[in-house]
Image 1: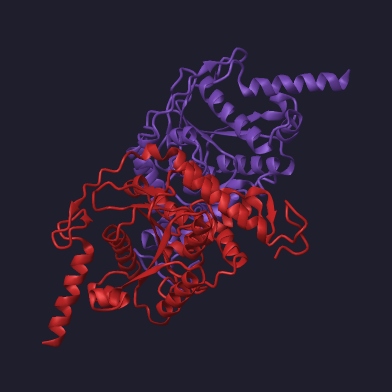
Image 2: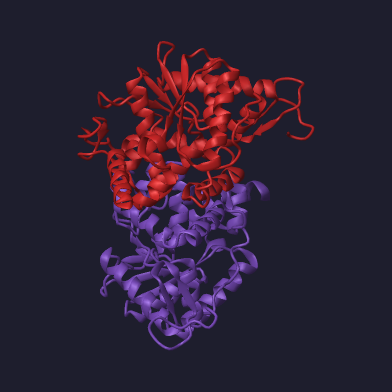
Length: 307
Length: 307
């Protein structure tokens, strides 16, 4: 609550001060603002149409439930996908929130159960494969979002990445000059392969703060906790730094991101060649995709343990 | 002083912990390290040779006196230029420090007196011209460094810009995607015009902390205070942010800067066309250079005041 201050458009109390837009908004006008902004993003970047069969990847957090709520309100045909990573209590609570959200709106949610699919939880899999949990988790999620969408006739995958997520990624790649990653960062990841479903980020111009305020204004019961394994992640530290910059220079985040999108062509085009994984057939830059490698590694480790 | 810790190369006490190089150095080895590093920069980027007539722009701060000390120790032929901006006590103290430094080493220092040259102090000039003091000060310094060098047979101008200065500038231009500024930022600004003297930054890979430690190790009596008008400057805030990043990710500054230099070509070449100022004849992108415009403005203002 912005103490004692009124909405820029009506007499109601403002619940958010958006300095970058010089706006203070009440619940109602924040909801309007967010939906309009998302719709504008969808149209400007051609993210999807009313004819698309849209799969929203939902984690149970404010962003993914929020974007699902917005797309549903805007009249898009959406279903949800919950990827259960098997992270103990965190995954159980997340799943409950997702199912309750879907039920309350008469929406369909699908589930991919990772422990069932690969034989163990994501943290255990990462440990066995000697990789960081965050990188294995990201890989598994990207794999299943695409595979589930492709196998079930969805034409677009939506993720809840917000402006803070986008610029934290941008900042990491920019300050280390990882040109190939800069080439690929986009609001729309197109279907560059027949087994790749278009992936889009309708919240790319919405800050984390705005996204949280929307979820609260809409009474969305979301998971407040960060994933227990995300503590100390580099992206969290970049977000802290980027918030300092935003507080000091209101609009910094939007200017940084918009400027990147406008100038992205200077980094050149991405020339990643995609093959079909020889095990599952889904796109990969390798012969066997990382998901199938992980799965194989786990089944071999399990065998060696039981012999 | 790094409490109780020894130099990485000898038994003496370390006075600096350079986490980015995994080195702790005593006074003697810090002095060696800095001189070698500057010499390496000079050679790698072809900044100057022993045949050059070098003009070091000195403000009285640690960086400019430090780089002069290093170049002198390395056997380069150097003289100093002090640009007296007429900033009250600050300029008076700075001038004393510069003159004392030069005298103690038997070096020659020249002076350009801005109040005499334009008829008023830099802050008053900025006020009269309705520009920020920092931008007017920067313009005047760049103008006189070049003009003084050209008119007095110097072949290279040296400035004391350190790594922190360079990446603060880079960060500002990078996060706002000012491509034309990114094109031009360089360790060597070449003579792209017959009235332009080559300008170089031998401390570009030396952090502010290292530069201060060198000045202390060498017993250089420098001006500790920042310019009174620099408070709250954006570059100061960027330096704070970049120090947070360096503390968390040792080597961040060097990686960011080196990565930029390595990838600078993606920003394209600068295509600034330089004319000769119709008043003074020195290079400018305009018909009359900003220095001559400022001078004219002040003389007109003075006239209107005295009539």
